[in-house]
Each structure stands twice: as C-alpha cells, then as structure tokens.
Length: 378
Image (cartoon, rainbow, N blue to C red; front, side, top):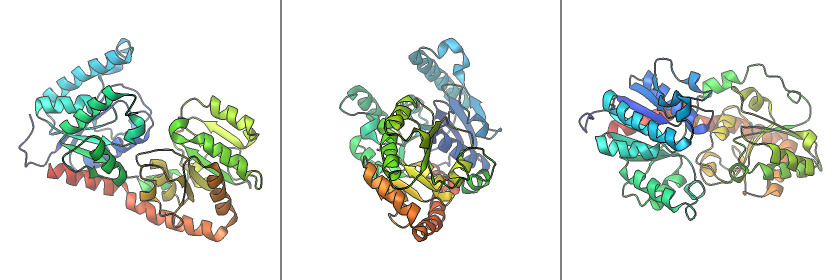
C-alpha cells in the first residue's frame, strides 16, 4: 500500500471533520497548501462537506467529501460510520503514502492506517485533561490512547502539551513538537481592508477577544468581569468575535452594567481589520493547545494580555516583553494588566514592537518545513 519505508512520502491525504472556521481547520489548510506548493501530491478527505474555509484550500487540491447526502448527516454516528467506510475505500484506491489527521478523525485514521499499512501522523492540539475529561469519559480515553499508540507519529503544537500527551497516553516514542504557523504577510494585508463598526476609530479604548463562545474553555465571563473593573476608572469597550451561544454572556454583561460597552458577533471571514484597530488583544482562555489568535495578534503588533493557561501561552509570550501573562480565572489581574497597558504609553509601544518580532518565530513556512522534515524522516 505504501512506498518503501525509506522513501520520502509524496502523496498525502489530510483528513478532517469539515472545513468550518476553526483553528485546527485553518492549520490543516495552511499545511496542505504549503506542501502542495512544495511539490507534494495533496488531497483532503472531509467527513462532512461543510465549512466556510473551503475556498481557502488551493483549488488544485482534490477534496473527497462523502457525506453531502443529507440523510447520512443525521444522526451523527451514521455519518461517521459511513464516512469511515468511504475513507477506507479512498485510501485503497488513492494509495496515499501518509495519512494526516487532527481532531476526532484521528480514531478511524489510526485504525485504517494500521489495517492497510499506511503511515499515519496524528496531531494533538488541545489540553487532554479538559477535552477528554479523563475521569468522566474512560471509554473515549482508552480509544484515544490506543489510537495514539497505533499512530506512526504523534505531533503536539507546544512543548508542554507534548509532555502531557506522552505521559497520559503512555507513549514509548517522543512526541514531536511543531508549533502552529501563521501567514504573517497575508494577515497584515487583510488587516488593511475596510471594516465598518461603530467603535472602530473612536477615542474610547477598544479591547478585542476571539474564539468559540464556550465559556468553560475560553473564560469570556472572567474577561467581562475584568472589563467591569476597568470601567470603574477608565471607559473601555470590548468586542468578542466567535460562533456559539452568546445569550449567557450578554446576560452577564447586563448584570455587570457593561452591556453598552460590549458587542458580540459571529465569526467573520476577515477579522483582522478589527484586530489591527483594537488597542489590546485579550485572551482569557482556561486551556488551549497553542492559541492561533495570540499569534495573529502578535503579527499585527498588538499588545497581548493573556492568561497563563495550559498549554503554550508561556511558550509564545515572554511576560512583560512581548505581552503580559496573568493567572487564569483572575478578573482583577486581567483588569490591572489592561489598565497598565492603556495608561503606560512607553510600555505599549515596547510591547507592540516586540510582538511583531516574536511572531516571526511562528511563521507558516517554519511550520510547513517542520512537517516536511517529519514526513521525510518517516
């Protein structure tokens, strides 16, 4: 099925649930596009043919999407089973040298790879303790552990996550660390596009946050509490961009009497004009793998205030030099950091200059080169 073990893999099938707007999907697209440009034969398999990032994939990359048939998309389990069978058939007919997967498709990919003797790369991109709820979901944990052990290579996007993956899944071999990469030039170009919002370009300081509205991970309620503290001494506004249910966050902002200073709206195709014109980018996450939005904010020279969450925040930010780290679940410390940046012009300028420098360490090309080396060594 696969080429000789010492051959450089040239035909790679990327497997994803969909191409909806999300960090994992954006990274998969960046890697697929980059390897395609470097001469690899790349294709993508989607369990569900949906997502507004599809147009970001190079038009010459072939997409397999078996579940465009509506009745197979509900219930979800039926779609997964059908998709797994279709994936098995695609691997048999297309004969890829390597299967690359993120998120839950890692499970069928690891099994198919082992059955058909195709090399597999499995990417872990988030905190295992929280995403697996180890004590509450023992069956899922055992399945994920087995699949990690079946994979030829496991990759993590931060050093601390790599350590956690190796320990939790009891892996014999080392977990590879390849940091997420961003297209810095494209981000800066897109940030110059026109964007209309009543708060852009006004005198009141603007704070921006981005992420799926899942408060148990993103910690937006703590950010709202921090905004209320800030507004006791200095008027400031907050925009949160992200998909999900916003009602509870809106209710909290009402109770905190800051509803007129907050705005929530769904993910937009180009968020970078908002980011470029914000005074501060805030990340209130309780856990991550490696935050893409922090990298994007750094690329635009934004002062970043982030929780020191697991994982990756302190691998991106050197506290006080290219950003500020605060404890998780601590609105007071977050508010203090926001006020410090808003009131100290010299600090703000220093953070902005160092942010741009730091972002160069997380370029898309560096990430793609990391994967190219990994694939070449397999």
